Amino acid sequence: MIKIESLYKSYFRGDVPLPIIQGVDLTIAQGEFVTIMGASGSGKSTLLNIIGCLDNADNGTYHLDGTAVHLTGDDGLAALRSSLIGFIFQSFNLLSRRDALANVMLPLVYQGTPPSQRKAMAFSALERVGLADRATHFPNQLSGGQQQRVAIARALVNKPKLLIADEPTGALDSQTGQQVMDLFKALHADGHTIVMVTHDAHLAEAADRVVHMRDGRIVT
Image 1 (tube, rainbow, N blue to C red):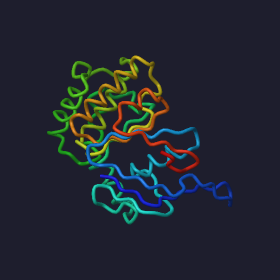
Image 2 (cartoon, one colour):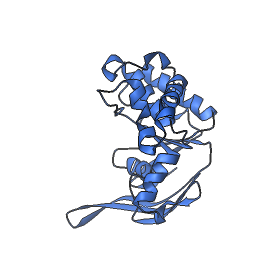
Image 3 (cartoon, rainbow, N blue to C red):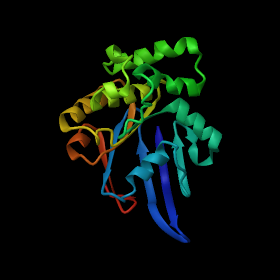
Image 4 (spheres, rainbow, N blue to C red):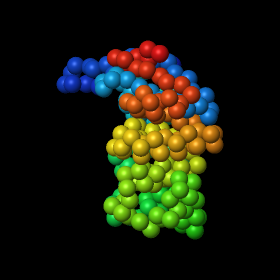
């Protein structure tokens, strides 16, 4: 599913380059659950953004499901994000003035799914995360854990092959975070490929493999 070789990425402070990713090699198989851990500034979030086609590397190669991402332009990257990848973020990123069902339908709108199909697909995704009975609730009527499950339903609605999760339990208490991780385990059991950044070593144990980063490099 994912093959990265000799990946480099720097940002600039004025004219001074700040190396963030330094020669990363990483392969992730279809259906694998991988967590990425590392201290702040280790490069893990930048690597996750590159894997999710939200950022571009400066050098190196990246193949996603057979597509050479490093040779793909902006329109092609947008198509990859829409068709192959579902994103889950720490801050949920739900629209406050739309109910759960409408929030889950948003990717379908952007993808051009016919309006006649959107509601049923979104409702099915909410059922998958156990929130069908909250479809007409707005974000401020939901707990943090329920909001994150809505965000996961939104990530699932396009039936992506790859789920990208950036600290998905970071804004939740430990018990609610464990419930969200149980959902990730179930999604993994269903065959989803999952790449997750987390700072919690206990939660990372749910993965098939833990990748540790330090100073822009994979160390284990």
